[in-house]
Length: 259
Image (cartoon, rainbow, N blue to C red):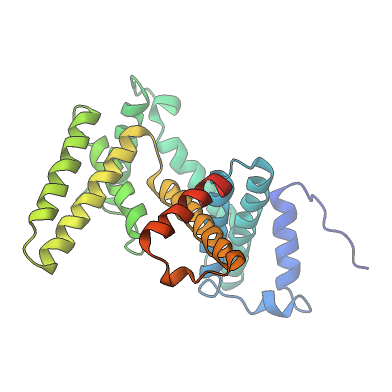
């Protein structure tokens, strides 16, 4: 049996473990990984952490955050082997960034509340990146709903915002009316997109993460639909051929059974 990895409760321990896996004579699978081959893994681990958050499961969240750290350690190790950067570079850069973007803590800036902190953060970020727009920097490959949330938040921090929730709800009603009046498929697609965007703004005003809300709805729908199918199987019914009224009755039963 090989010697155990020291510092099992620290990032240094994880870094040592990953280095051993990548070293000559280490794990064949780990040794052949690259930044690109691990891309999907990083994305999946992030989504699993979000699911743990959705379920309000601290122990599962701790495990999933650990899996994300594994991805960080692997990318750092791969980069160090290629002479690109080291894990020290990663920590130094993020720590320096946190100091720069909190001048009200580490400098003499003054902010009145969390809203002003957000405005200050975005202004500093724009200056650092040399961006022409506050909306620059959100990765183009970000899923549409998450992208919408990101740019909506940034626009609001810049003061492009409704005065109250009612204004946002009125905007939803306005966009729905425009969708009804859409003359062709192109216009319908554009107006439906505007409806989605307005609903994301409603979520933001309510303090709800739209991605999590929709993911929860998707999960509930899948559970209820599976319960409907199972009920039909037990009763010898063909779900597809049932009239909609009977399907709706099954749906109400499923809601009571599985939530």
